[in-house]
Length: 158
Length: 477
Image (cartoon, rainbow over all chains, first blue to last red; front, side):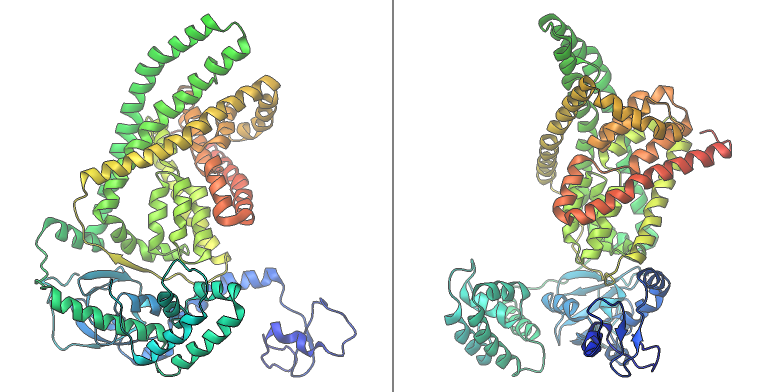
């Protein structure tokens, strides 16, 4: 949270560390800023709940925009019928548990994938199996597209 | 059995870890060592509880081997395994060109495309309705009710009991208005069994055809709005069969948040096949009421989903699922599955119905039943229903469908609006005893009590508002 006096950020869970020397004991309901020592009043539960309802949209974007994936081409950038070689997986920013699952189905460097459709979900073929994933997961797979290799499976979907 | 030989670094780490693993693990020690190297949380927790000191030593080796690689260890292990798999596959199999020529393949592709997929979904639901709602819930139920019970078993039981048992209380228990045989057994066999049976047969066919993952893929974007992912389609669809079973199936969802959301929606807005069949049977003579019922229940599902997905904390769900090829189901497998499910359901449902009959009999004998009915009466009247309908609501506590079946008996005396209000309230109303028990087991008492505390008033408020709005607008259905 941001201190309302000096404006610097601090971790509310660690605020008790700066309580030393204060005569009040525990549960005073205040959060002391470790930078300036100002006692902040924490946000009320109800307000936080309300804020979360309003802020849902922006919170969602933060999760979706993975900085490392942006610069590279991912499965989500291919067009239906295009095949590509897997280069690697994005595993930071909470993508780790997802990445492990993708590894388990053989999405490893050098593996060949064929994107079958983009809507309503991403469907790709690897080996002789088809998988459906959402765009968040598709963005975790960094690939190198193959040149002009359309329709190797006889249909492209629309 | 094949033992995969990994890199020397990993092999050496395995060798170093194995001597520290004491006791039995149900798996080979090599497998346990590999899981520890991969950082598997479950095994690490087990080790921590068992042998703290050994784990510390092991973790030193794990960290040492992790330093040898730039990539995360699970990734390294998977790459090496994949290399061996590729080699074996290349040596031992011939790959044929994969072609899409069969009907199943073409249907499989079509169901992935929203343009064809949505009509296919509607067609599937329509067929399901005709089979379960019309054939099961009307034709078979009618025959069993009218021919087998009302003209066959019931008069015989009443006569026999009257002949052999002089005590009116015992006579009532067996063959009275709410008797074990005349009510409990009749409801379970004549009303519930045909509906559940036809549904389970249809569901087994859908399940074995490989259609459900396609449905999940098609619906994922919509389910994201209510805080679930496409995978939740499976418990939700199963809920139309039996919400109790579906609540157990919510285990397949990944996050706790999704499980709680799915449990709530199942308890609130997904009518089980028995209830659905009875409601369809009750409302079929008022098509407009049936349509309004569907709109209200779907509306509640979406509304509650939207709101609770915003309130409940937790991470956003992600969607990941294999799409198996579509295949014609095997008859033997479908029949076996249907039989197993019906047996399970019947064994579970029959005692509850019989116990409910006994409880009602006890309640009537002691006056508790009348007291509860008197408590419910004003609520039922507020919904614009005759007081006799209170009986249906009281039954609803025992089983959802039991309540709806009580409505079936009142059918002739109620207007379209009354039937609609009663059906909506009963649909949203509390989960049945069995579902309640499963919720307690799967989600814990906090979540369960929260869900029930929300649903009870909510169901009546929706029913009441519906009644008020319809009468204010002067609508008759």
